[in-house]
Length: 63
Image 1: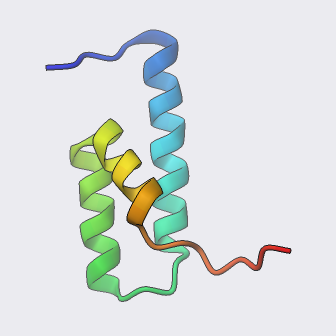
Image 2: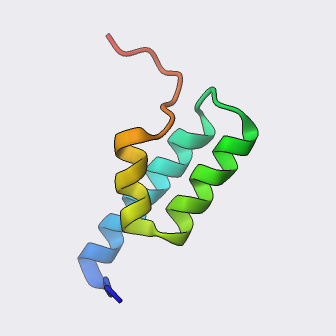
């Protein structure tokens, strides 16, 4: 099992929190939000990477 500690662990924690906030702010259904949040919480690094590539995005407009 991959064990993260120190600065690497803090970076992963910050990225996971950012992902969860973005998931909650997305326009997708509640069930999908719950599944995405669980994925990020259960598999912090892998879940974040999967969310980054395929997850729901928040509804902020990008210019």
